[in-house]
Image (tube, rainbow, N blue to C red; front, top):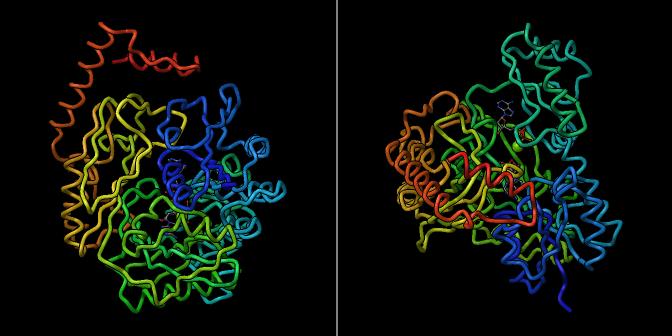
Length: 498
Ligand code: ADP
Ligand code: ADP
Ligand code: MG
């Protein structure tokens, strides 16, 4: 009997995991959410469990009790959480264990420890990982935060210990504003993560975000697969990633990678994981946090190392031994990932919802597309705005930049604005070409006027409007209908808006 793997996620990552499941001879089971009843990933699954989450306050992907009761009812053997949602929730991993379902990821205790940045930092320092100067542990109140800030010097960054996805963070430029910022960040963290604990770090003014991919098994073997550079961020969230990083020398790679492995071994880590570092302008680097899940940007590592990280996550969960040794890991060429988010780069990356009338992806030997949508899909307001990823492999950095740019010119989407024109601008900017860009680039250098072909975007928008108008007038029967009335009303309103 084939083992049954349930994917507690949606979008492109659900399809990505189904691919690995099939490769390993497993049956892939997914949920159908009423908030997205026609999603593309449903077409790839072997079995669909209707979630009936229409009237529930949260989508199925966040509802751990319901996930577990449906999983038991449908005789699920393993659960893959993907990223986001419950992927870093220790209670969810523990609940899976309690129901004898194999959670694909590290142990609940490891997820719990690494989920609190202050705990992770206290464990990291024991194995010699350098930390950003700061309070290290949580501070009880704004007054204590101020004592640390006065000592390390402004600006500082207040960070929520339980934070993630760029939330619960505030930059404080001067002592007068620390109290207000402390309160708003702590309140935000309490609401989002159920934990308002805050700590203080020196705010690095112009840093790079570098992260090391780790892979470990349950027998104490751990390797690293080199670094990714994810300095291109908006709202503290990544938007374009590359591997390797032009700012990491072979010596640094070895040193940072060995430190990451030593740390992972010291905590008994298994499964895929990421050690995030922040690097200052003088080249000094510090441990920032550890993510205990597969990351959005994992394909760039897969492309340059030839290692399938999702396969390995599943195999490790099935108690397989890691057959890869550190010396087997070789870096081949360069890879870039562009996130296709339905966001308007002209307008502070505000999320866009509505119809994808037509979408066309570039094709080529060196191009990998991970998508959760197709022509005719709807981007609803219920989920994240990332709809696809375009990943390109080149012989070296300049080759991959050229090939990625070419791929992006081949991409088209009619109906919604995306981050693709933004990525095209980035790839042609000297700061990116020279690899001097930092996490401040979007905030300090990027201006919407830098987007090229604004007319093209306008023409696309106009074409879409005309298409909608004519379609709506002649063929109102063409308006998609769903079993879900809320979504129907939303779809109709959306159409009438055009
Ligand atoms: P999250 O859990 O939200 O990913 P991180 O601690 O990884 O939180 O930080 C997210 C981003 O915020 C980093 O990639 C970086 O751009 C910025 N950041 C975090 N800490 C600092 C710091 N001390 N100085 C400057 N930027 C920082
Ligand atoms: P990473 O460190 O892996 O890049 P990010 O914080 O950039 O992590 O990405 C996680 C983001 O993905 C979060 O903003 C989350 O809201 C979003 N997300 C979670 N699940 C999905 C999904 N299935 N499809 C698209 N986006 C998702
Ligand atoms: Mg992070």
